[in-house]
Structure formats: structure tokens, C-alpha cells
Length: 120
Image 1 (cartoon, one colour):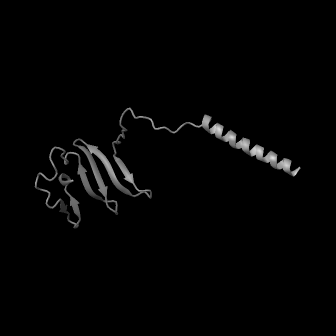
Image 2 (tube, rainbow, N blue to C red):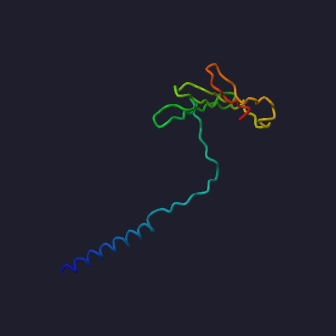
Image 3 (cartoon, helix red, strand yellow):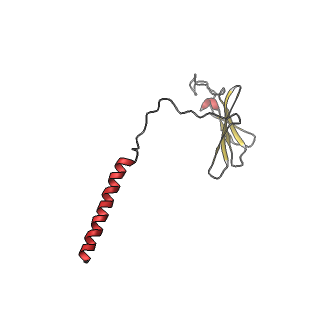
């Protein structure tokens, strides 16, 4: 009687395992990457886009105006520390060709070193 019960439990467990394997192959969709037909796009809302930490602190904002895009980086007090405008950056010249990158930063009124956008 005991051997019969053990055989029945083993048979049921084996069938359940085999059924799980078969159903996983037939029912679950396969995880294959799809080729993107176009680049991903994020539309910036009219009020801008805020980047926050998991605890809710703002670290950066992305916005735009009539002159182009604006990226603002915030300090630990959530005050704007740096602002980069799209029309400030130039992709036509080499960063070090202007000779104006020594040193590649400016010191603001508080004493922080802020990198010159043209030297990035």
C-alpha cells in the first residue's frame, strides 16, 4: 500500500512537471527583441520635463524656447546650478581649437567651477 502511494505521487509529480514544461513552450510568448523601425522619441511638454531622484528631488530639467532647447542642472538645494542652451554649443569647431578653453571652466560668484559649454 505504501509503495503504491509513493508510485502514484511520483507519477503525478512527473506529469505535472511535464505539463508545465509543455505549457511554457506553447503558451508563453518568446522574448525576442524587435528591430526598431525608427528612433525613440520623447516629446517635451510645454512646461518642460523634470528629472527627479527616487525620493522626489529635482536634478535636471529639459525645456525649450524660441532659441532651442535648455538643459538646467540643479544643486543639492534644488536651485539651478548650470544652464546649457542649444545655441551655446557648436558642433562645427573642435573644442580646443578656439584657444579659449584654458582653463575650461569659469568660477561663479559662489566659487563653483562651471565648465564652459564650448569646451565640453
